[in-house]
Image (cartoon, rainbow, N blue to C red):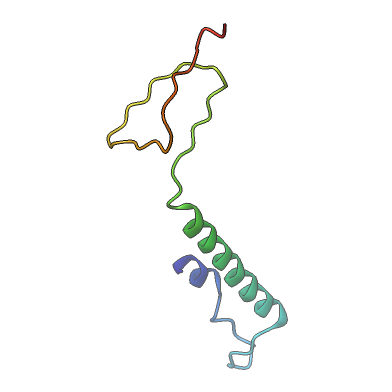
Length: 83
């Protein structure tokens, strides 16, 4: 990704005109790449997750649906009176 590429300073000079990579530079590059890969995996895993609502037990609510619902078993009405 662009952020990972920008975090890596590939233009470090060794003072002799070469492109010698130091141990700290190699470690920094590897760490940046690893963090970028982990972040990309987490985003990809969670990007399509539907929102989850948690409602306390017994709370009355209305649900509006935009598609047909199919119930596998016969529907039994719930006794909201509790008695």
